[in-house]
Amino acid sequence: MIARFALTGLLLAIVSGVSSGQADTATTSFDVNGLKVIVRRNTANDVVAARAYLLGGTQQLTPAIQGIEAFLLRASERGTKNYPREAVRQQTARLGSTIIVQPADDWTVFGFTTTQAVFDSTWAIFADRLMAPTLDSAEVELVRGRMISDIRGEENSPDPLVDRLADSLAYVGHVYGFTPTGTESSLASITLDELRRYQTTQMITSRILLVVVGNIERNHVEQLVQATLARLPRGTYSWSPPHAPQNLGRALVIREASLPTNYIRGYYAGPTAREPDYQALRIAAAVLSGRFFTEIRSRRNLSYEVDAPFVERAIASGGVYVTTVDPNTTLQLMRAEIDRLQRELIDPRGLGRLVQQFITDYFLKNETNGDQATFLARAQIYQGDYRAGSHFLEELRRVRPEDVRRVAREYMHDFRFVYLGRSDQLSRALIDQF
Image (cartoon, rainbow, N blue to C red; front, top):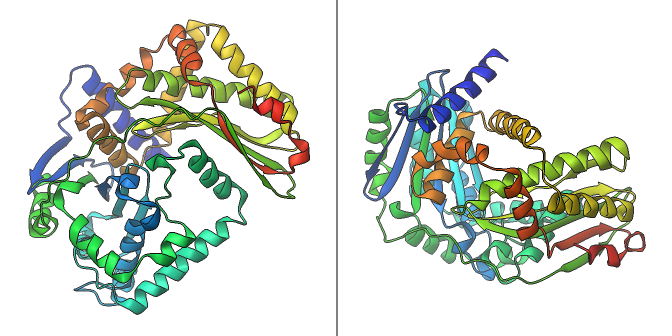
């Protein structure tokens, strides 16, 4: 517990210190053959997290190749130039390291967490997987089968199913509507030649942002990068956010299911990450989420899980989510709370307390070295400079009651809903009010 709060305190100190004009001497950056590297030295423990952000995310995809990058990176676990077949997994396990593949809308994270003592050995495996996967046909088919099996499993798991359907509905005709993990049909159709061509053309240094956080020296990281990843082709990639989605108006998709409870998720489109409204809407969503919890879960006991999510992307989105046995009463209460947020001003002192609590909760949820890496990456990718993250606290604290009301009015409309459950328990007229 002491270590946990020490790590959180370090992150808060770094961010708040820079925002007050102090130099962030713990973080440095450099460029090698077009590959941007950020290193944050954290001596609180010997854990080191390295994360390669392969830029583009869903902008890399078409309907036919959804999931191709995740497919390629997962196939790399089945053998590389220097670690054939099971050697990759055996050596990673022997080192006690964890290598992750996390496809997302704006990037794919490929990285690892390990200790300082075995960082170099883990790096060798990580770099070889990124640079020289074997892509043996039999091993690729094994990975394909497992990924398709995972997707089929989601059809029987309500929350992942609703998440996927809601994103697709909210972003019809937009790249955020693509599934970075792939669909059953896209994964089934991606050929071995397409995987190899993607490896050759898309594993380039100009697409890679590398962030390393932990007890490790910048010079050491630079030497490893120069000997490995910097030898990839440079390419000419330049990241930019996707185009703004069209305003498609309200929508509802119903998936009939006989379940103990009904699932509802609806999204609306928000501002870009570079707009002032981004943080104001983040706070407005937090206010709404707290009110949902109080009214729907605590007072009425209508749900065990209710939320007003804020989705952090280059273009934000917000929404509502609930699982409930009484969808109509719950939707009425949600609509009433949104109306109140759009009509009334929050008490300034209450807002100040909420912002401070939000900041504390946010950093407690983002306290690991890997989370800190993503915090830096978001600032670098969305704002063009990792140091822009230092303004995060002051931007939140600048949000005023008038801003909360304004963004609630500006963005919280034209919800696009997915409903999973018994259709005879849902009033379409209530959905039309959002």
